[in-house]
Length: 288
Ligand SMILES: Nc1ncnc2c1ncn2[C@@H]1O[C@H](COP(=O)(O)OP(=O)(O)O)[C@@H](O)[C@H]1O
Ligand SMILES: Cc1ncsc1CCOP(=O)(O)O
Ligand SMILES: [Mg+2]
Image 1 (cartoon, protein in one colour):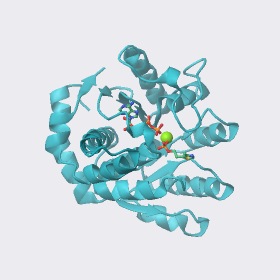
Image 2 (tube, rainbow, N blue to C red; image 1 turned 45 degrees about the vertical axis):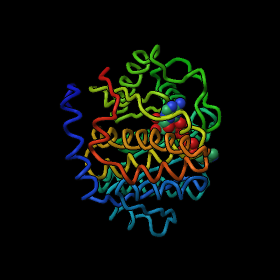
Image 3 (cartoon, rainbow, N blue to C red; image 1 turned 120 degrees about the vertical axis):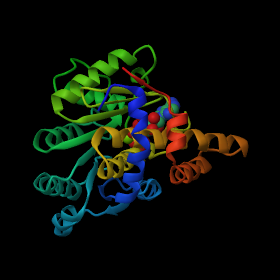
């Protein structure tokens, strides 16, 4: 990708058309907490969700899928096996794999599963909150020490701010180069990088972390967008679509004096109403 902001924004319209035309079959192995939200988010952006995890059918599912999303939010023995079978098949079929390393750093099991997936498979993109990304940096030898996430939520000491943006951008870019993957680290400001181009995205709303699943939905949407375009440009569309939908959803709940339950519904509504004009005009991105 170019490092020119105007050229990056110029690609949004054609990529969004491609994503919608492709209607990428998005195979998700994900947690049961937010699985329904993920399927609805995929449909809203223009993908086609397929949640399958029984070992008996996985090779067939991956063979027809355009993209595989692995979310480790609520692991079980069966799911771990399902992830191994699916990733092995995805490597054979060159199907992009998107990893959401929910809660990595918090338990040894999550560390082991995450690093097994990263070390043994072709991971196209990793999308996690900044604490999760920093934990992977530590496990990969790119960072000496890291805080741990608060369960599935970011550690407040890690939150991306204007002050630590450059340092975090450099760290995540180094990690992306080392792992040969795209990384999208989320928070009030998001950082997206493939190790060559690093973009900060300052959109979204502080109600987003107050519903469960905004991160899981984002990772699934990243999957559909990558399946319909390419890793870096697809991830950029996904994060802009989610965050601008979040901004509009917040304006709507404030207008109607509502709360987080309605916010969750409006988030899907505005994701569905995503259009390139608003992604271009309302985006607040900076090349780092
Ligand atoms: N304080 C915030 N202000 C604006 N957007 C936010 C904020 N926190 C998270 N987001 C957005 O919410 C989505 C999920 O991010 P995050 O909360 O970091 O993931 P997770 O749910 O996996 O911890 C992303 O689109 C991110 O940009
Ligand atoms: C609450 C919870 N517990 C296990 S997975 C999960 C959902 C996490 O979703 P997100 O990372 O999108 O907030
Ligand atoms: Mg998460």
